[in-house]
Image: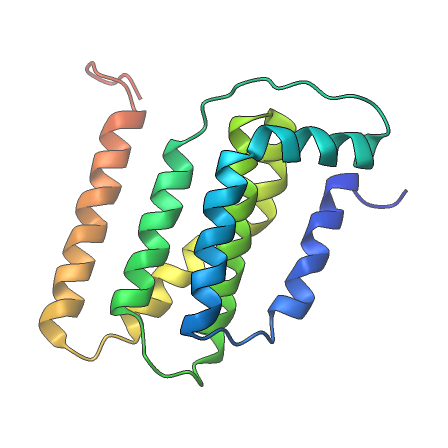
Length: 167
C-alpha cells in the first residue's frame, strides 16, 4: 500500500467539494448527528468490524472538547459567514467541517477514530479567516478578530504551563 489506510476517509472530500446544501438538508444533518451521537458505540463497533474484519473495543477517550469547539465554529460560520451561496470556498469549508464533526463524534470511542478526523481538521484554519474576510460590517470584523485573538491567547496560556519559563 502506498498510502496510509486511514486516508481512505478523505475520499468523501471530493464529492463534498461540489455539494451545495440548503436549509432543509441541515434538518436531516442535525438529526443524523444526534442519532449518530446516541448510537456512536454500536456504529463504531460495526464500522470497526467491517473495516478491520475483527471485533473492536471501546476505549473511552472522552474527546468531547474538540467536538464542542468544532460545532461552535460551524455555528458561528453560519451566523456570521457570507450568505452568498456562490462563495465556493466557504461552502467547501463548511461541508468539510460537517464531515469533521461527524468523524469527531466517534473520537470519544477510540484513538483510531480520532486520527481519521485529522484529515478534516485542516479546514478549520481555512474556514475562520474565510468567515472573517467576508464580513462586511467593520465593527463585526473587529469584534471577530478581537475574539479570535483572545481565544488564541487563552489557548496559549492553558497549554504552556503555569510557572516562569515553563513553556
